[in-house]
Length: 517
Image 1 (cartoon, rainbow, N blue to C red):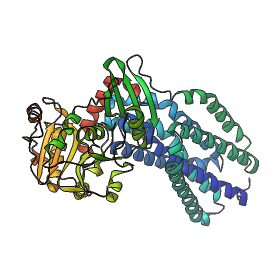
Image 2: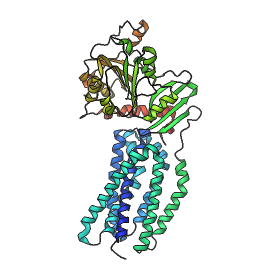
Image 3: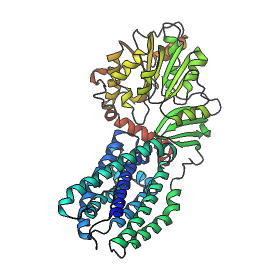
């Protein structure tokens, strides 16, 4: 056997390392999209995926190095073919794995499901590096150069794979389709490498295992593709619309028996209305709808951060004639609000990340409604002193910031609520808090922050409205809270119990099938 790769062989080896390096990052990033609908796009999911990737690569480097020495420059094609097969199996196994790990809870469930789904393929891809170094090294004093070149090319592949997935592939193609395409690409690569091994490295049976594994993968392909069927909801629920975006699975779900239409993003309900009348069914929005009547002067311009189904913008316009700009990060949510909930912009309809977009907005606004904190994952960067200070700068002198927050009102799990109150106090001198459903521990809390006290005796309110609001006034003890900043923001950690509770509510209502793909 010739121990020195020719120029074509070395180029092919670098291309192989480049493609497998890209594959590692594609699988890792798509892993969050496979798990997030069930466990949320939280720090715990990201931590689990990154940890599993690092563990798999460490094992792959170790096993791959030992195998490369014993195989005497053979077996690279078999490793790639096995990685391809396990990659193809990820979409097929996702549903069963997520349902099986559900009893483990948010943190353990996210980690174990990541381990079961992605560890095999990532470990095998990690084994490619040591094999490639062995093949690229013709003498001992060239080991350093070979190792450096291989890992440099692999890293460049990872960068290109990350950018290609995030900037081009994912906005146009679903995560399951990308994984299937990646598996097929790796199968083709395995066969090409096997042909080279058999012809140039004198490995007589290199092609056979790769071809067999390719045939197995192709035979399983119809079942793998079919495993991603949509949730139907049976007789109780009907899926009007379903779309995978960069930020989650966005669905419009009807429950005709309750005359109810829901807008969901992964495990969060972000909008609800009557099917027959289109009126909002989210009770906290009834409180928000009275805010302009509490203002010391007439409101004319508002900003809503977190569009949901768009009901609040409609109420502000129809009831008070307020022109409202809306800011929503997810274009799939904005489209669903327009096509299924009758949302019509009365001001600018901006699609983008709030933290970036608010820097470019031109105030002043009489009212800013901050409605990004649902029962699912938390956009913690939108609830810091720095963000709230930016929003304060967009308000008029008598303007009001209304912030909706989902959480627990009492016990150790109420520290998050206390922290929200304490953080708002750092920016606004006056604060009033209302609870959506009196008497319930788990609730929507509506914070009104301003430079002046909120007048619940406003003459613009009817007596019944005044009594209704006063019944929902809630006193928050913020002495146990922490101030959220860009530097220190433990919101997601403080909201773990809430996320698990909320996910359980969704599962009990819809069934776990809604949250798995």
